[in-house]
Length: 373
Ligand code: PLP
Image 1: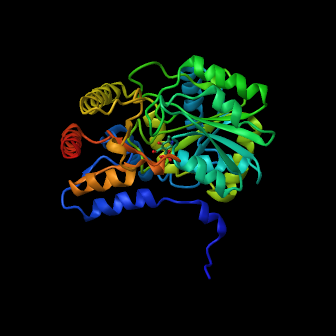
Image 2 (image 1 turned 120 degrees about the vertical axis):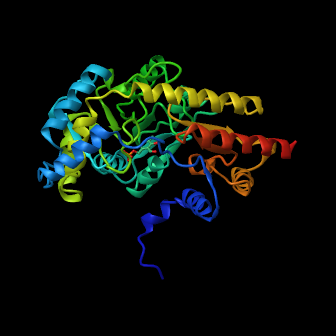
């Protein structure tokens, strides 16, 4: 008999755990598995965090976050994203992933249905199931672009929410304004909420980022500092959207976290003053390197217009796990696609790593292609 609650049964992180375990067993792993930018947190952000500690800014903040940070975020959201955000309808959360759970707790009742595009960032379906909602998958294959007919077909009278993520993890797809307007129209016709996860908004190499919250008021926009400011361990994200939803999240935050870390919030204020333009150029180059070499090997990469991932089909009808085992055998750590998809024939390659590591990883992909013939 287990003491563990049944809701944990919906939660399966074994594919990631296996990848990390395998990496720890390798002498010199080439790690293209997790979504970690190669950069270290910039000096001006670290200095702001250290200053906060030295100035004893180490107590709880308001549950919705420091006013100074929310003011800076409101300005950013208005100017860059055209979203009508104010310091009142923004709430700071301890990372977007926690924010995702808080949003779900605020809006989903057991039995509600959530439309998630496949492939997906793993917490979207798993956390939805944990709060008792049903996940309906709308496949984006083979192009990784949303299929409007599949979305319409997935809608029932229990549907409450569509989850959108552009630029996308794991496919790297960037959705056009036209596509997002079409999704907004479907959502409006059926009175649905939309979550728009925009954590990779500045990692766009082809096309242009467009924020759904600029055209559809029932959008809950989520973003954070982890990727673009290399702050994965600081745990700061934010959510903006309809006031009643933000108020509900604030009430939850009061009980669940009290407040996000004060030190990280002060560091985030400093992060807002710098735009990571050079970072994006560097990632653009890495994207070109990865996609060009994979295409030469016959992978025919789709998506990869943004973020820092390529989601490719394993050759010769190998399953994702079979392919990953082969890669691990050569010292390359990548994640089986089943962690991100109901399908089991894809693998995800992250190009957050530095160029040298990437080149070594691509050499191994080439070696595997030669082996398979
Ligand atoms: N959303 C997406 C699409 C991601 O890929 C990730 C991390 O990989 C996150 C959110 C995590 O954000 P945070 O570090 O703020 O929890």
